[in-house]
Length: 166
Image (cartoon, rainbow, N blue to C red):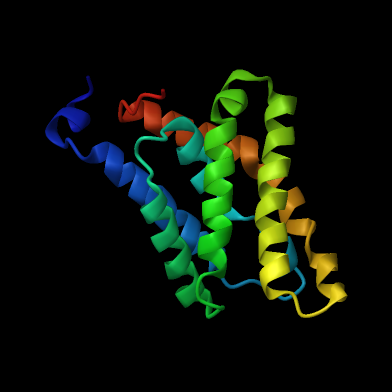
């Protein structure tokens, strides 16, 4: 066991918390209006990673509180992100063994399903017009492109802190 993990028993939880703080920071990062529709769904990617790889660490009430916090942070309708996160959380739990067991392309297909489910939930709950559907796919595509990087980084750091997967 590495010495840092021995000295700090909550280092795994701190990594979990730090990954969400970084994802939230990246989500609120100011961008130009031309690039903002393409910005990845950072929080959803981190949520899916931890739900799939460490389901006993993340609980439904934590996901709900995260969603409420994001709603307050973004100034949206209260509960919209919370409901979208909960839906993604439960579907990710159901697909967790398939996501972990299958090859890269199969994993990407399931990620496409989860990210689309998140976007569709947000779209149905807060869309003002059919023109909003034009901004439905760009964040999904960029999130799929960066998923392997997010997955590798989080898996590397989880291994450093001896966070074992089920």
